[in-house]
Amino acid sequence: MATYKKRGYKPKNKKEQEEIVEENSTTAEVFNTLDESASKTEEWVVGNQKYIIGVIAVAAVLVLGYLGYNKFIAAPTEKEAMNEMYTAKKYFDDAASGVAPDSLYTMALNGGEGKYGMVDIASEYSGTPAGNQANYYAGIAYLNLKDYQKAIEYLSDFSSDDIMLNAISKGAIGDAFVQLEQMNEGLEYYEKAFKANVNEFTTPLYLMKAARLALDLGENEKALDYLNRIKTEFPSSTEASKVDVFIGKAEASL
Image 1: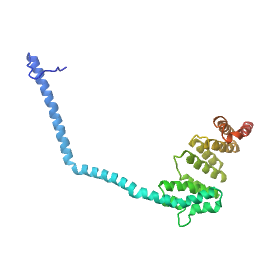
Image 2: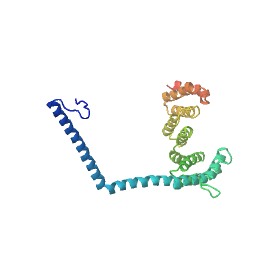
Image 3: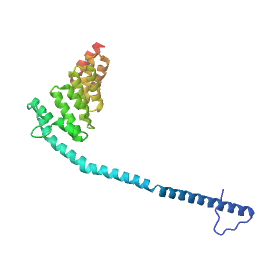
Image 4: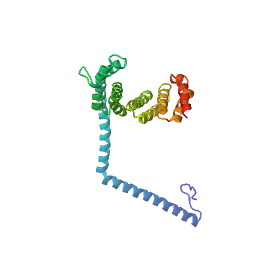
């Protein structure tokens, strides 16, 4: 192992002199290698300047383009879409309150007062948050108007991180499939609905819908499992107040 030697140190014998010469030689080789590598790197940079500048320019254009898109296109488009949605949303809310629901749901879908309805907003502003919300409102409106195929179509295009809306949209698809007498698909979506998020409202609601449909399909063990979950996990829910009746029915069918 090499030892540290002070500046001006003189070798005591021939062996030490040879060691110093060897160390100096190795050090020189290292620096020469570094110099050669640096030279090659510099040569590569010089030889590929156009390419490097081009890559940097493309990256800059992409970043600026993204920022510009968000500021000058996406944000104004979203604001415009939300403005268009205001009237359609009012029709929808009034219909949901029970005020002339059929005609108001139709106006929520097709528009009025010179404003777009949910169908046009979903189409014209596809890919925006407003367009996504329009899919939800259109799907629920079609469900209430008993156009179950279109309800499934629009609700399937809706996605949300909201714990309630995510579950409700899947449960609504389940309702539409049941109305179309596609019971297996209905059960599948009720299961998706209660699995979407565990909470005191949607989870027992769709557990009960799934359990009752499973009973109708003869899947009694599955139904019993869902009913017992309501009883043990959600004892304060509305569904829990009537769960014993269905548990008895499921147990009798096993």
